[in-house]
Image 1 (spheres, rainbow, N blue to C red):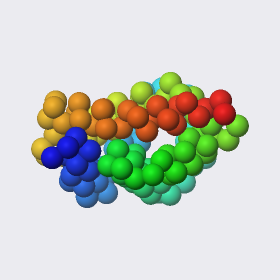
Image 2: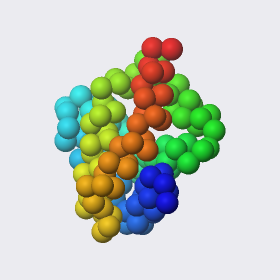
Image 3: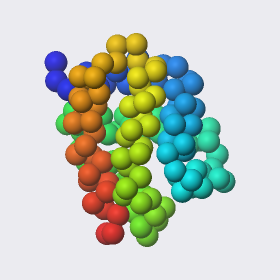
Image 4: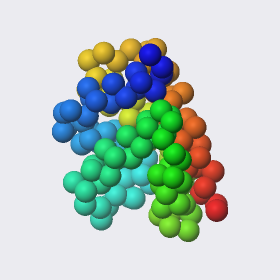
Length: 132
């Protein structure tokens, strides 16, 4: 089984618990006051739904899905739209992995490496679109 398949299964185990997404945002916002500030006027219930789909898009892209949805994320998060600083994606990934450690009972250090290598290409694509 490939890394992207292991990550897909891990995500399924973790996101089965609705608290997963709440804890993710708690972890993510604790990384920086600037990140917290981005979510001040955000409908967090809707945001958690977007996160659920967004993570799945990153995983599916690694499993061979077209990059169209990743490019759409990159466009929406670019400087001219939501202006999400590319440095925040490292915090985002760290928060995701911290949350997975709690919610995926099969999480291991090896699986963490799979997650990082699986999501890296999509995250880099989104970051590279910041100034476009």
